[in-house]
Image (cartoon, rainbow, N blue to C red):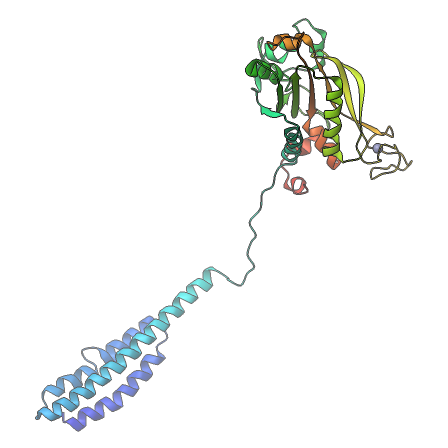
Length: 355
Ligand SMILES: [Zn+2]
């Protein structure tokens, strides 16, 4: 070929090759174009071979430059189009798998269980009053659960609590009170001011009783703890848990491990202690929450029985103390108007989400 022929070949073929490259719609089509135009049998190869056969150095230079320029243009066009095709292929693959325009699915957020919230609130109040946390085992020796709490084996008070026995000497604790004796023995000298939170077990179940439930136990023993201290502590407690207007009322009662013993009532926070109206008013105008009495029973309490102090290794002639036990489920049911205790343990998210 002459210089003019090479020039003509390149002029005609480069445009055609660029057009073909740009028109390739897939990696396969692009590869065929590359083989056809840029491969060893393509026009470019043909032109380059012809350059060497030109008669003069001058012609070789000119033709060589033309061939190299064509090579560079085509190579650049090929690279660019290859990138476009690959990017398009990636997009298509992603679009097939992921619809990025769909709204995201929000991750479920956990929250504290209403019983945990209630127990934490109770423990926060007691913590502010100087009670420190104490713990004991749920599988408990009969001695701690009963005998050291002034309930010997033949004591009729054992019938008050339906106990799960592991064997003759080991029970599932029926209350958090055994921690009283454990704390006295562990701490050894006054002041002893502890709060214990945990599970307790009784063979009893209906809509207000569960065979497993939670208690918070408070114990304060020191040189001159009085019944007035107990009442003051309970008053602060109900104000913090049930609202600033809440009042506390104590009624005589009996527990083997306290003397004297009281049932603790809080003024009804639904009808403000009036017995009528309020959020839980019935058709007859009476408050259903407190059954129109204006008071709600919330816990048992009392002055620690001297025998229990003795079992705890303390001298009842020098020390006095008070103790109280609160049912966490009961407080939670009252606070939020939950009528069935089993709801707390069913883990139904529709229920748990409300707190
Ligand atoms: Zn009421």
